[in-house]
Image 1 (cartoon, rainbow, N blue to C red):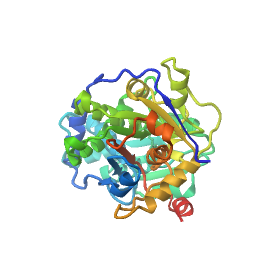
Image 2: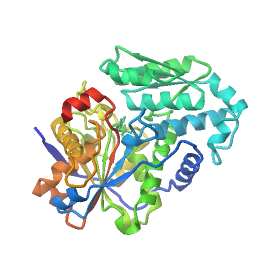
Image 3: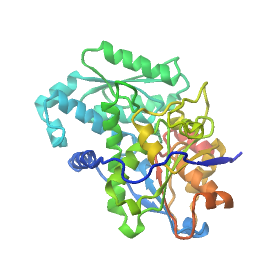
Length: 392
Ligand SMILES: Cc1ncc(COP(=O)(O)O)c(C=O)c1O
């Protein structure tokens, strides 16, 4: 079934309700000092947009982030947050942080003593392992029981990282990584999710994602700013990071309508919106979805309020809708370029793709011939075999 669902937000406040411009500036300054940093492409699917009678369909292609050993957006958060941790230990000014400072021999010595601990279902751990290699520090990555060997091998391929698939579910794996970090006097937990008493590093991770918005705003002329933004959410840190950066950077009248998209089996934001009490709710049980990066049962503490107060719609999609989206991007129309998009990476596009074929959803989302839709392809073929099986 390619089913998708959509509800209006019961509590959107809208407007400029926060200002993250200082953080966004810091992140941009840092990335512009990284010698191997390069913006990812913002791809316009002209023929696709024409066929579906919208003004534009833009895909920010994070499958090409940093290099082909990562294939997802995740390291934009991990690298920045780890750099901040090392800088703080070395007594450096975070506000002025430049990559070259982290390469100084006395800072490298400090980095070499630190071990970063994390739990991951794949992409975050891969970003942390790669960042550990770049920064000359160490990482211990724990994965939940249902993780694929391929994803573990991708993480193990980096120097300085130890990886293990545990017998635990995701939440217990996070607790395990937290305990290990607490037991190690030189350990730091680098988790892409916040909870009470653990917010500073997740905020830096989410802040790191803002480089994606910085690039988009440089790549798009003002009269092509999106009218609609669709964001896939796991714990919501990507979405809140993107919304904060975008809403802090553009005037209120240019802010797009925001739709949060989740797998139908594990939709904690959709559930929370349905309950409508303004609080975050957890999806119970052990849900399954092919969208592994979005298989998150509880919203991140720092992300929930941002999303609650800004998102206009919440949608869910089935695994089959995601597979169809992957095939559409793999077999483009006319001169549109091919985009390699993995199961979680495609979710927002797949939701748009299904919505555009449904008259009622088009109306509900206010999609028309003057709409410009922006989605982020958050991952490429992070598990090559799974990608091939679905697309071919
Ligand atoms: C490819 C991909 N897209 C989207 C997400 C969602 O990010 P978040 O959990 O911050 O909502 C993830 C998370 O791991 C991911 O791996």
